[in-house]
Length: 368
Image 1 (cartoon, rainbow, N blue to C red):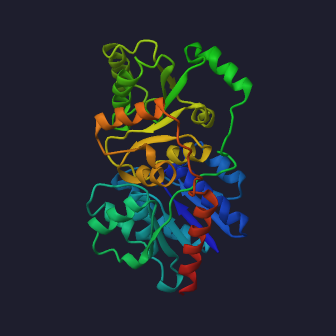
Image 2 (image 1 turned 135 degrees about the vertical axis):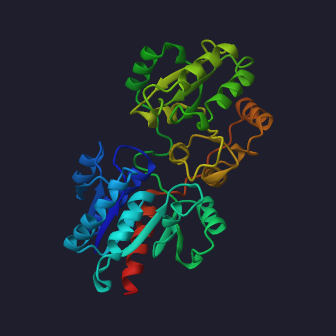
Image 3 (image 1 turned 90 degrees about the vertical axis):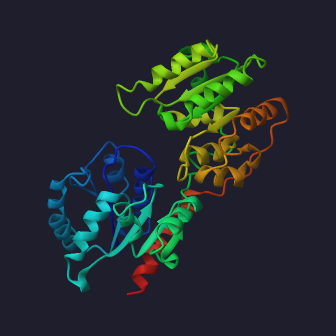
């Protein structure tokens, strides 16, 4: 079996990581894996795991991108692709048009994964036109059913994203050397109870809500300290400055640390007393949520979107009615002041996600 995955780029993110994970699973199972993208820093890792990468400009939303359709047709034909798996809207359109230019008996089967809760329109509708449509959470599946009634429910497959339990093992304790280096870099964290909000510093990720929460729970709990792990999504973003000013307005001087972009997220999640997902609109899944839960770290989240599904399964005590700030403050205060409930084992395993995806491919080919 030869599977070709196509997406805009391989820089970073959940879509990109999932592409690498499926590529690795295909190779381990003795299949051929090819990925088409405009390139990125994850390409060496992809290739090292046995996949082939073909660089093509399938990322730019401009009329010139249509010139890639004929080239993709030739690539699919030359590779002898059995499956084309599209993971984003523009590449999906280009791949779909390319496949339709092939003779019917030479066309690869077409799979899409809906990774987001896209704006509902014809452009986004391509993600529901696969012969199999993968939804990464029940929230995404429900979004498909609610907004694309022409999509046959029989072709939709719910496959939650998964976490590698060997990379995020339950009970992981950060090395002493890491802690020493941490306290040297951020001495204000020494001996503190860390409340951690992981994610990019963008408005919808809930950074402002997190600071307001800290302003309520930190003053009466001297050891509590908030940490935002992640940087802005673009170099000149004004939002980090807004958050810094808000810290001052809320009287949080010395009680909040902005850690910036980090390559040691696992250690931060494992060091946290509580992790948070406070997005202001529903997220399709939330990878950092399952990474924290896999480690055994409790997560507090609004009852909305994909993160609510995973928190409900592993730490239901952390679910808060969507957008209810008073309930959020009350829940966090109760968790900090009481005996912290144990996190249930995380069922969202990477190996399960890989196996179920490969079964979707096999199912399609068996139908020929």
